[in-house]
Length: 212
Image (cartoon, rainbow, N blue to C red; front, side, top):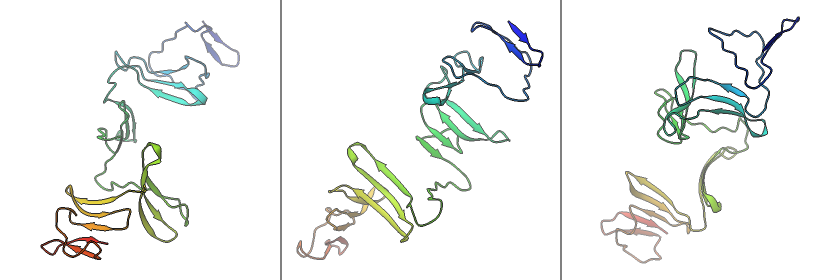
């Protein structure tokens, strides 16, 4: 059922099973309001035979964008494009997010032919210090942080027996131990000359392999 009011307002439907089909375009000068109730939302029907993208309300007044069915593992569930139709953000069904690419190869894949840059900024000032943290459960973590007040780049393995390794092409070139020792050139593959208490360890070829 439909009701046309004297004010010009129109009410379509008076029950949940009422359906109204529009052929062509629907131009709205104003707002489209969908009450936040269970089952209400915007359904883009006919997208594919197995997928119906929806925009609905979630818990705690959140907005849920969802695709159902279709390619549930690798397909691009959501794409955001600029005015020329170029995708600048792609969110896939497998949880991977691509910025500048529609085929992300990691959970977050940033791609650019001009400026592939990831920036972490504090917005100005001497605090707080921007930080990139690598974390797992039980509180074990490592981080890279820039101390903006003192202009110091900090690399920290937050563990009592933590080690920091520097590698090139899979080969270890330097290791910093929690004791403060610095080991070089695949320490352990060479043989010390001198004593364990020496301040500089070299192998039989004269390569430096340890500072103590």
